[in-house]
Length: 224
Image 1 (cartoon, rainbow, N blue to C red):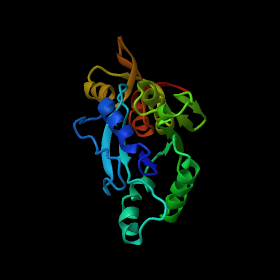
Image 2 (tube, rainbow, N blue to C red):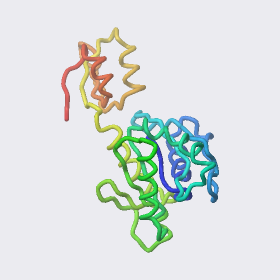
Image 3 (cartoon, rainbow, N blue to C red):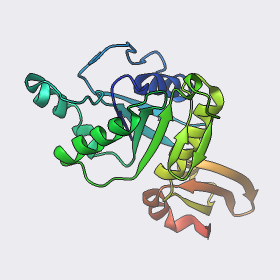
Image 4 (cartoon, rainbow, N blue to C red):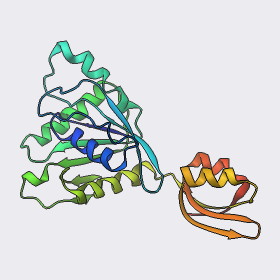
């Protein structure tokens, strides 16, 4: 997943809030500075949620209008991470009168560097600087404040619904001599229920498509 958007929209602040809650190494936060091009590096961190689901989160350099020619190539090279993302989260400064132009600049730049038509959430940040109600969500658009816990909760929920939509909820019956399978599921899947039967450990869990195929031998039933 990649955070994209106009510079100073709050991308790094949002990333740090996510790292603080779900980071595998929460000391590795990214720099936040109220200036253009605080960094031209793409920062990548791994997040793990309470249900054991994991994702890689990248914070790209902020977009700007009329980018100086000398910075064009360096700027674009930092954005190629977005082309490989499962989800783009566009952060927009909701308090700015130029937010429509910001969104247009972002979308134009993505087209210029050849980023495909990927799933996207549009997150209007800094709602605390306006009179608007927040946090709110309408379809794939959210209005939030990165400083507000409820806003981050809403954002995380929206991200998980997008990124993990292909997860399968399945029940597995694992023989007692296959403790390694039980350990794997407990570590890498979102285990919903565990029950001990005469024939083994029955586990209901949310798993990736790959893990679902991997453990077909123990599969009992699937839920939508």
